[in-house]
Image 1 (tube, each protein chain N blue to C red):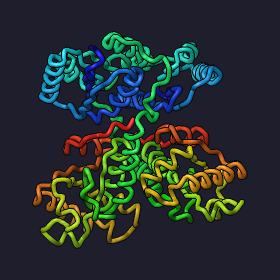
Image 2: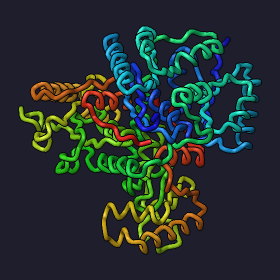
Image 3: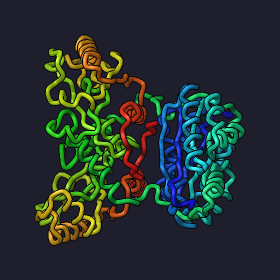
Image 4: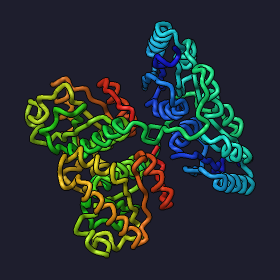
Length: 277
Length: 277
């Protein structure tokens, strides 16, 4: 019976709830056979809101006869006291971890909302916005004249994950990432495409499995030559040959999320992240 | 003395280390008077890597005479055993929280890498990529003919944070967000700009403080009319008047990060997030 019903899980915070959500999803991923019904509630920043949520949680728990799970990062002690009254399992990393940090740092923690998702350092924040602007302008082979400013230039066939990865690198890490699509014309030559040739050491290749590429392209342009098995096979072989010939590092992104692709690009190229939080 | 030196902090994981980093930054934000030197190490997925990191942590700790801090999410028990040997303060949310979840769920956790940043459900993942494509194509007033597909349309003056917010909504939550810049021509009329007028209920306004707008624009086009105090003041007043006249919800984004703007947009518009992890 237990598994037939989805277990209700809440991610709560007085702020954006990004931390509660990120931690919570990682924990829940350790129970792949369970179904969870997730509700993220950010900005629980008044006594009234906290009380209303406790009521909602308890009502849901009583109705489903399953104890709900609450993962929360409340930086306000008074609000946390209210949340604690609910009958859920409460996972509260601030409560468990801040005292240990206080001991090592010989300091008290704030006991009020921190600045983890607010703008602390405007110049760092501006460098993040600059990276986003850069990624937008240098997407899909745009503005190739500015590649000297790129931290990294992703290369690969159309629909191998270049654009999302560049945007994520910019948004999350303030990294200036351009991307250049290898065209059929480029593939006919043994040389690197001329816009990227001077920047060989900043190039990083993305490739993907043939069937995945066909299915993504098929959804985009059904029945086209662009989406055909032969065309996709030709392009993938040609770019992988190019990567190998010019000793360009590359990864197969088939089963990878944007987060994972980005983390690998940072590691493989030893890129410096700008602290954007 | 304690505070003169930066305390070394490590975010470790066998995966992307996004969870360790997100949680870690939230915890450290509770100690704003301390300086931290942060090193994120993802993909610690072999015994050799784990051993090398323990050695590095201990060497750094010995040299600085300050106990390092390690925040880690290792889903592999054997690797975690190795990490635990180091002389740092270890914050290990998996160790602390998974047993409590096991009890409530009456189930064992995986004891191996979960899928929290891998592709679990390809169709959900595709909807995220679709949202990114949508944001790219509908940035800055592009392709206004497709606004009927938008979950949300951000409006505001140039440089009020529309583009980063749209990209974040797409990447993080799979939400289709377009953005439309209010032009001077638009400001001269009491009507809503014609491309967005049919979608009033999907509009959401971003505005910002005058001095912040001037400084951002000044960096972009120094000495221009675009960046002048008078022009910025005129535009901000005109859009706020427009938002009020047409009962469009809006927020002042001056001190907000992209994460915070996005979380508020989701809450204020009751948007459905697509589970993208």
